Image (cartoon, rainbow over all chains, first blue to last red):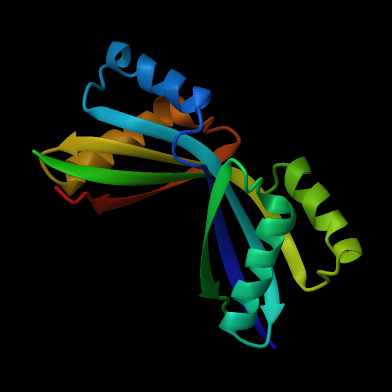
Length: 86
Length: 86
């Protein structure tokens, strides 16, 4: 068994309204940042997983995403795995 | 001017209670995942920024984090920049 650190970035699918991101973006010019656009706010979930190999770990994390970390109707997820120092 | 895509991962500092992460972690064994631990839920903020160079872009994104994307008392942030296709 090997240990992996997973980062799951959950973001709203294109076309889904992102009121948090829009609010940040609208307030930026008044705060002196007029060169920032397309602000999107999502979730970053970190977890530690033990599996036989990287493919197994990735499959399990993707199953977690599908089953309850994301709402696949409105959200996409991107999984990044790194081998944990053991 | 160059364009960059920034990903800001905002996470709770070590020692700060993370009730969302704890709740997910507690429910995992009942769902068949007994090899997952240390679940932490944070925010992932994506934005598009124009700046002269990567150091300038990074400086501005870090200023944004300090000023209003994070609460530095309880949160840490990690900035990842990639050059946008132009």
